[in-house]
Length: 432
Image 1 (cartoon, one colour):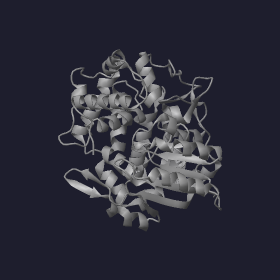
Image 2: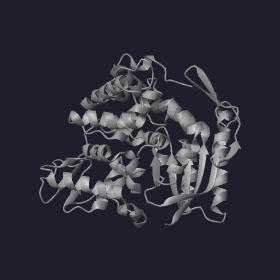
Image 3: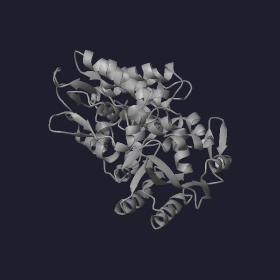
Image 4: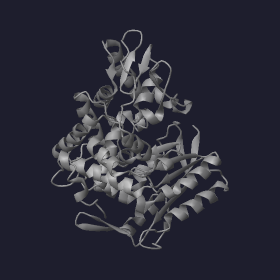
């Protein structure tokens, strides 16, 4: 099998602090056992090829620290773990109150690697810092594949340049040894064809090793059984969960047999008459196609601008309270786990007839954490607290951007996202 020669540059301070906002326990696991998630990352790609690490570099501020609960975590404690995992750890002390110089070192080292033999075919930038955008543009011009690992919502101008992005809940799944669906957000991995169905990109020939495994054969049997007996289109989320329950995560392996996600694994089966929509699988020879397709949800102009500015989910106004409610229910009934949270909440909303992707649910979880109501806090946040924190985070991002929103625009945003108008601005955003 061909291996992709890869360079990985990790801005530790940026990624660790971002993961801490989402899930402190997972962040600690990320920092104390990097070898585990690095091995999994070597097996996960949309091409199906394994990665061979030519460069592993971690940029860390040895004097940095972060408060987690009642304890302050000193960054230098994690150096040894990254050294054991094969990383070259580069000290990046702070230049001033906000910058440690890691972004500059990453850019210099990555550009230097472009002219070094053997050639790195892929560059992984583990940072949500949009200052890396010019570097991504330079790597693209040099015809190198790029992957961004960003635990929090990075600027679209930054992520749109990359060939692949691992977002917050995908990174947590990576760290926690759980299955990662690269095609979880259909808007990024699936293209709309003229027949109104969604068609994932073809699976690479390098992925064909999975086809002969016993687990893949069992996967084929389960899906074929459900497909042949279905009287109507199958819900993809429910089908995926059924396969997980019958086979177990260990049998499925990383990223659905290494094929790049559940939808790609389905496509590899080449079932007769198979069609996929964003949420459904059906036989076009036997089933009535789903009505409506992927028509855009009509939204006010300020919300449309936020979609472009920060990838705000395009959800109907009356869906937002249900999203906050589902997240609150999860937080009150479970120990927080980001991957489980997005899957559980998606299924709960699906039971109500609301089709909300895990990607969009993760966006709300991230925003609520940045706005002061992480789902892991004790006592668990209420639906109202989650909504207030999420909207507070959205408003903070508007304020820090160069976009111009009038008071009327901001009022529309608050109303659409179902924010209590007199509470949102009263609580400051959570800091470190």
